[in-house]
Image (cartoon, rainbow, N blue to C red; front, side, top):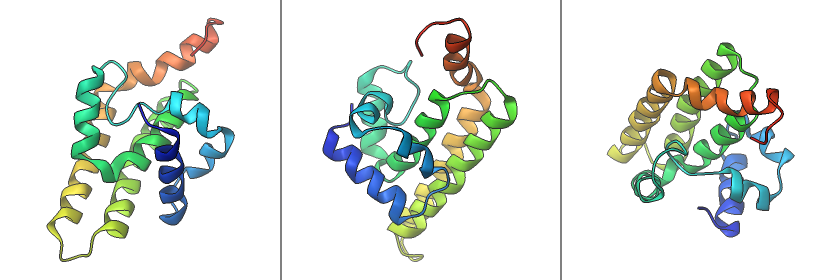
Length: 142
């Protein structure tokens, strides 16, 4: 979904904003991240819907990239799942603060969206988080 130049741009934002968990991205080449990063929303969403979410929430793309990398390395533990979702919320707030001044309503919209997406992941994402772990455990490819 993302291009190579988009992945490079998102990596730079992760570093500039000092997003939590950005270290995980060092394990992957830009080409690997092109395949790994599916944008905002679960892989089960149709591509047109994820593209629409990405267009509506471009500030959260670097946050989602870290989140996707974390979930691809799922260890099947509830604590890891919860920590990843909480990190999504905190990173969303960091990106919003770095991107928009305190006087801009967009800042608070991005923060609210980060909170909503993290809550949605927490409520409905457990099976998606488990899938890569279960695939590794059964000897399949994630």
